[in-house]
Length: 494
Ligand code: NAD
Image 1: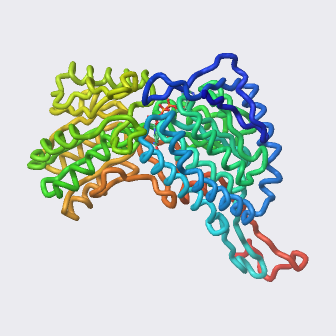
Image 2 (image 1 turned 90 degrees about the vertical axis):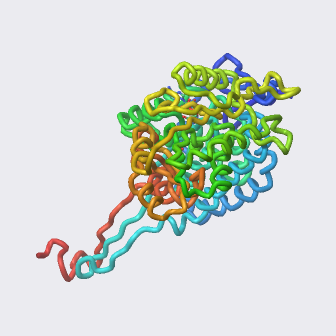
Image 3 (image 1 turned 120 degrees about the vertical axis):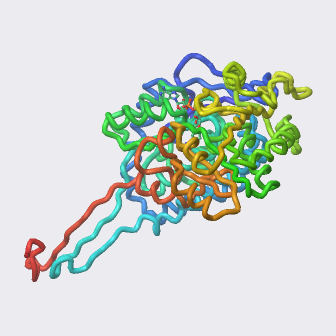
């Protein structure tokens, strides 16, 4: 049965108004149409903004304790719906069901974090800032805020935004990826069922037409965005030039540096998990393996382990790597493999011929490894976003860090070593927002803020954690005196 994906505007489910019907084909088999949707028009977006604006005063005046009580209920419903969410995600995105469930868990942790908003959003008070004059500062929500999301974590990334924005007292409009709209739709259904009032959380489906209307709309106060670097930059430039607060997380090209003293088994496992988990469609995936000195002896083990990854049907619990999201994305990855060959890199593991029995039309690409890559090659500089690992070599840590820092991206990076001194040098000198020390995926954790450096992030305040609270609120400072304005000391006194 083909399910219809709709907008949620002011509590009502209604299809986007563009005439063309778009289909979401299951990436695992390449034939089943799972969902259909019509994209939204600018008029649909205007309606969503109008209802979110109308719902704002009542939601803002709902006590933070009550707002969070609703989030506790939402969290319970999310737990109960975990299997359904994971299956939906897998069906539209191609992650294995286990990977999908793991990503939903990371999202639920943000709901748990945001449910602590009474403590997180407390202000400050100073008694007697001057004699009988008190000073305090507190936070207010911004109003209507919006979120634009990528295809690769269609459940987790909306949850980086929605719970924190709502707990702070804002109303929200979500624009999911048009490639994977179903998981976000299920999520919004759950938030609604949990008691989020009509108009407080809205959903508009569609592509750039819908999102560009949202980021330029006069009644939108802030924009959260996660996606590729060119679009993140466009969203940041357009949003800020329209007077909005913007946090825009972009693409990645993450290095793993392996020192000669790294613990071999754990390091190889971590490289495999980081490079090929979620078929490499992860902004924290390592796509460059930088072997320092004798660490090059690990390469054979990495290649053997990559060969042994079970690529297959996501419904099979023994599958370790599923398909890519769309045939177009598969083509893009295959094109990069061709580019690497033409650039003279040494293709030591070729995933192009991998097929899965019974799923011949699925978007599968097997683990791929290039050796002898250098920092000037396109496969070293550009984000491929697939299961392709490029191997380079350095003679010492200093040279390795210098090579990693040539990247225009600065999302994540990892080092494997038994030396605290090396780890400290790496941590201090490498130009990235998220670092792993003996871990291949410095994953987003709800209670810390998440975002890269350089072309991986545009803005000041990063996603969720304390920055999220800061991003979705503005502060007011009050100087207050009573007793008829006859304070014992003037705040202007010398
Ligand atoms: P994308 O940039 O193509 O699309 C993201 C969103 O932007 C979608 O909702 C899309 O509809 C919208 N969009 C696309 N073009 C637009 C335009 N011209 N104007 C306005 N909106 C537009 O990204 P994607 O392919 O869906 O996702 C993969 C990318 O996301 C990768 O680059 C990956 O590194 C990045 N990503 C980054 C993080 C992070 O934390 N930094 C996390 C996940 C994914």
